[in-house]
Amino acid sequence: MPSFATSPGTRDILAPDAARWRAFQQVFADGVETAGFTHIIPPMFEDLGVFLRVGESTEIVTKEMYDFEDKGGRRIALRPEQTASVCRAFVEHRPTTPWKVWYAGPNFRYEKPQQGRYRQFDQVGVEVLGVDDPMLDAEVIGLAINFYRRLGLSGVEVRLNSLGDSGDRDRYSAALHAHFSGNADSLSPESRSTLERNPLRVLDSKRPEDASLIAAAPRMSDHLSEAAATHFSAVQDALRRAGVDFVVDDRLVRGLDYYRRTTFEFVSTRLTAAHTAIGGGGRYDGLVAALGGPDTSGIGFALGLDRTLLACDAEGVFGAPRSRIEVFVVDATGGREAESICAHLRAAGIGSDRAYDQRSMKAQMKSADRSGAALCIIVGDDERLAQSVIIRTMEGGSQQTVSRADLVSHVTRMLGH
RNA sequence: GUGGGCGUAGCUCAGUUGGCUAGAGCGCCAGGUUGUGGUCCUGGAGGUCGCGGGUUCGAGCCCCGUCGUCCACCCCA
Picture (cartoon, rainbow, N blue to C red):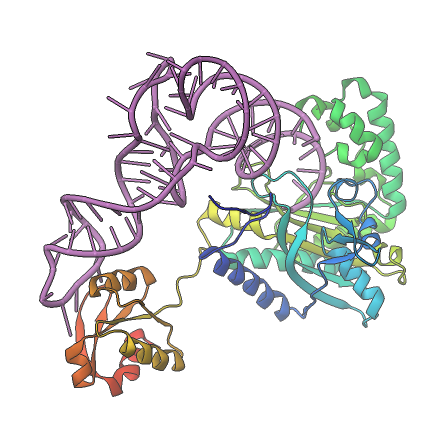
């Protein structure tokens, strides 16, 4: 039996999934770079303090951080998300604004794994710093929607809300606290403890016994300042102009404390498991300042790679790309013919593979079949002597003999390059 | 962190009230086919039954512990 396996919540991504991941990130990168975003690759670990700004009341900070002391005595944490890193980078390098960046890569949270939730999980995302314009909020949301479309997803719903400015948020939070603690008896025990940590999160409870109290709770929309309300309606107008469907969800509360004003979530309507949220984001005006930078507004989103792929599976779209092997070379003379033919094909940019260990022709043909190649090239003693090869189509099984010198041009033509 | 289900071949699983040498399908390898894959036939390799302890004449099966995994809660992507 094996001595080791992957740690809980981590896994190896093998073929063909690994290529699918790469394609996913490529599609994302192409889309956002077309919109003027540049790539940022922040480190995977940082000073713990960077991430504490995510919110003292969140479980991400209190329970789920992969933190440790390094050999130099520094408090280090594996990043649980990348927004804080991007803001730290902004403060550190002070690029000119607007600063539009995108990222892709793994994050780490110490959680109990289950479907669509891992301790090491990948996200792609964007952040824009230094722009207050509500039209940007809509553009950022549209970017994600466009990406989903390119993946082929159609069952994605945009849920939209505004948490108001920090003053609004605090006043609303106090109003909620008053409402819920006045009726604490009829609240579930879990929600009672949530109430003390973060009243907003009680709205997120899915427990049936909390439903009626939540329905009767004060509305965020009644607590928005004039400025925040104007901003929010401008965002909605811009979304309508862009033809992006959305539903305003008064109860939408996002997990991280830094969110202000516009918040949104992307929900797969085709996913039945617990995790239907495949992405989310919002404004975090104030995070840059909290990290020691100038007062700078920010907005962004992160999309979960696993969950989005789960949604793709549910819709039967964006499957794994097929093998890059187009030609498989079968050599019944010992292997040296295949050796040189593969070298030629590869030099010409044609994906090719072959068998080793002088296996039987039948075994080599089986390998050719499994490789996914469209063509197979067969060399036996006759062909070697005649300086020719047989080209066989794997699907139809028709074959022709051509001279070695013409091999690459024949193959190129047959593959339709 | 809480609760529940499940750990038997590479994969999916069967295995009776505890009872001979632990099985099937798929996959893999070889042969049937002395020059040809995908179909078919035959054969073969591959297991400390997750791990440790206990009960028993005897444990894949029962008990305890542990680890892993899945699901739900919590939380979140």
